[in-house]
Picture 1 (cartoon, rainbow, N blue to C red):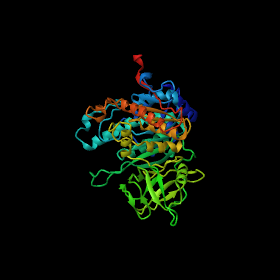
Picture 2: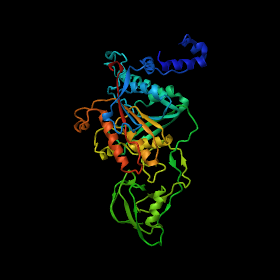
Picture 3: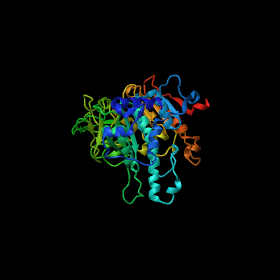
Picture 4: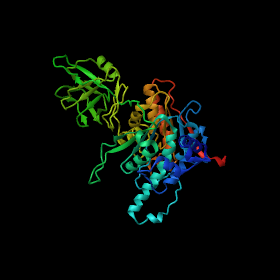
Length: 484
């Protein structure tokens, strides 16, 4: 019996002393004390999955300083290896220490998982029956996820929060096992994220444009999530009779309620555009330079933008309006619909939550084009982290993929001066030789993730005035303790 299991047995003994005799749990006695169960979600291998979460790990962490960045100075970690072993080893050091966990686990698309926990099953049983084959895939996914979430819960602080991205295939099953592991009473919400602006047209029933993010707290509390900053009503920036002047609106400061496209320079009903302006995702991708009967001069405009004011164009007339944020800086809880029209709080510029297309561009901007399938945008993770994190909180991602969560933590620290640290865990899954990433020199997903974090850190340093920003990370690998 591991030390961790012994602690749980002692906790149970304190609540139900008659159910623990000579250090062993009397299951039948415990059932009598608790009463009859009215609902039980189970599947083949669940008992083994539960046991796996409590087994001791036969592995150890081994530092690799030569692959790290600023090894002696950083508080960040990048761990290579199976996340079930990494989580167990972290449990020995960080039980009750992690503020936020974000994961984007493998979606059950019908492919085999690289996370093989050696649950025995006869595949010949499933071979010829599509229904049973589908059930087997659900079973394997549940057996993969259950023990990892079980250990992850132990790492969370009492006020800790977990966010889990998922699509429609395993949404129901993830909700069921999360209710069991974290407690249905600790469920907060399902956030719906608009993942693409170009939905596939293959389905004759519906075109899927969203994914889901389940949110649970370890122990539900009365803390308020920081979503959008409270706004005053919008007002016109143009006033008939004023002297005409020219204003330059920086990129991403004007929100358009008209179609994305290039608007050519020239006369519009309310203003004259001095230069072409490109609208993408509802925002001006380039500076908007316009002449009109504006109430403000350029100095006033710049001062307002510094306070968080942004601008609106609601029609092709280009009647520009301004939207001030609350002078008190108060925030309101986020809505559970996350899209490109969402706003980050406490920032001098207002940006929406990106899509998969945005994430591809973010990687391309780091000279990492087409190295990862379906990455999440930095703005999505940053928005979630801003709900609940501050100062020196620890953020964990144990399906870290391309390293978006690490990028988001560094960028968030640069924006608000925080000292959050990240722990990324990733299986060193091999990249297919036909893949673009392999042709760029990356042989494993870990190599992609580490290089992305290096380049992202350099990019973040270029846009911040904070001298001691932590953009480093220690690389640890999981190795068999018997080999040392």
